[in-house]
Length: 170
Image (spheres, rainbow, N blue to C red):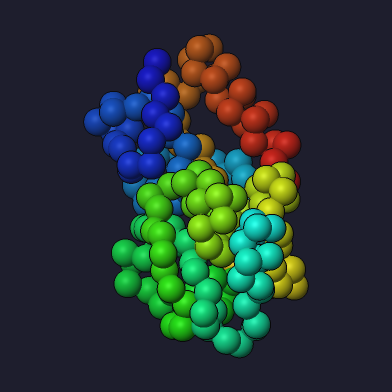
């Protein structure tokens, strides 16, 4: 059995993996997807970053602040916001290709960024504007290959993945 943990959207139909954990629901109607987590996202910074640069004012469009963003969101050509605040006056100093890299960059003090609330709290980061969350929550989807989802071995792996996500603040 192959389990892929990359951020690339691989094809289960082509047997590039047996199980996928994705942050987007697949649009292929032949795939059976199960949402295993739903997390609100908030705005976070490290304490050292806040001490050095202060917190942005709501309505300022992040004027004078360094920002860390998720690269696929940046590449989507949608209006960029963090917790519904436009980025028009902030400086995007880092765009990262994975949520883990966004988290680590925020924790390293590189800039402000948007991550799941429970992760920011677990990482000991400062939540800015706690009354705000991203309008659409961060969903995590489990997608097993249809031919294998009832085998004993794959079922055991699926149960462990689901259990791992059950204690994450959904």
